[in-house]
Amino acid sequence: MKSKFTFLFAFVLGSFLCFGQELALVKEGKKAGYINKSGEFVISTQFDNAKSFSDGMAAAEKDKKWGFINASGEWAIQPEYDKAKYFNSGVALVLKDDIWQYIDKSGTRIETPISDKYFDFNDGVAFYRAQDQIGLISPDGKVILEPTYDAIKKFRNGHAKVRLNDKWGMIDKTGKLVIPAEYKELGNEWSPAGVNARKGEEFGIASGDTFNVIDGADKVWGFKGDSKLAYARKEKKMGFVNSKGEWVIPPTYDKVKAFVEGLAPVANGKMWGYINESGEMVIEASYKDAEIFAEGMAPVKDKKWGFIDKTGKLIIPMEYDITAGLAFISGRNSKGFLNGLARVKSKKGWGFLDKTGKLLGDKWFENAEPFESVK
Image (cartoon, rainbow, N blue to C red):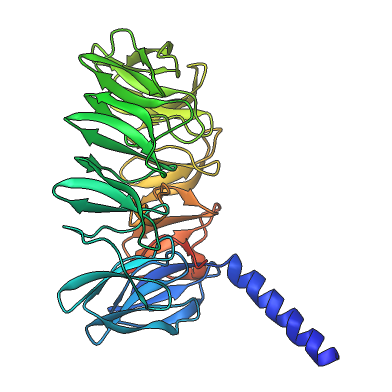
C-alpha cells in the first residue's frame, strides 16, 4: 500500500513540476538543446537544428529530417519530415514528399478541405484558401467559416482583421464580424478599449459599430495590454488618446511608445524618458533609446542596453544588446523581462539575466531563444 502511495505521489509531483516548467532553446557547438530556468541542460545539445517549445512539443532535426520531441527530449513523433512547423491547438504543419499536411500529436494526418495554401494554426483556428478567398478551419479539419474574405490576418486576443473589397473589418474565432468591413486601415490587435482605425481621411478608434474620430490626427496606433491609452500623431507631434478618441495627453512629443504598467517612453529631440498616465515626466529624459516596462523593469540605452526600475534607478548596467528573438510563438514582448529573466547578448554570446543582473547558470551560448512553456 505504501509503495502504491509513494508511486502516486511521485507521479503527481512530477506532473505538477512538468506542468509549470519552461525551457529555452540554446545552441552550443553548432548543436541545439534546451535549458531550464536554473540554467541546467534538461535536453542536451544533440540536434542539428531545433525550434522552441510550443503546445508541449518542439520540432527538432536530426540527419536532415524533422520530428517532434517532448519535454524529456524523447521523440514523440519520429524525424521523417523534410520540414516541420510549430504545434498550436494540438496541430502542426509538416512537409513530406513535397506535400504539406496537418498532423496531430500522435503524428496522425488530419484531413482538411483542399487549400491553395496551407497555414499554421493559431489560437484554435487556421486559414484555408480557395479561389483566392480565405476561410477558417478548426483543429479537427472542419470548416468554421467558408472562404469569404480577400485576406485574414493573424488572430490576436481571439480576433483577426479581415479584408473584403479593399476595406478592413474584424472577426472573432467563430467567424462573426465584430467590426464591420468599412475601414481603409485597421489595427492588427483587438482590445476591449477598441482598435485603431482609419475611415476615409479620418483617424480614430473603432469598437463594434462605433467609430470615434480623433481630432486632427493623421495617424493612430493600437492599445497595448490593459492600457486604456493609445498613442496618435497630430501635426508631426505625438500624444495619447482614450477609447473615445479624446486627447488625454496632448500631442507635444517627437516620439512615443506604448503605455505599459502605467508608464510610457517619450522623446523630445534625441533623448528618451518616461511619463505617467497624467502626462507627468517621472523618469528624466536621459537615454538614447528606451523600451516599454515589463515586470517592473525596462530596457534603456546609452551605447548599449541596460535595465531600470520604475524609480529610474539603473539596476543592470548598460552593456548588453537586446532583440525580440523568436517570441512570436507566444506573442509576448521579449525585449525585456519574461517571468523573471531577460534575454541579452554580450561579446561572449547570448544568455539570460535575472533582475539583479546575475547571469543564469554563469554561462553564455552561441544562441538562446526566450523560455517557453513545455505544456
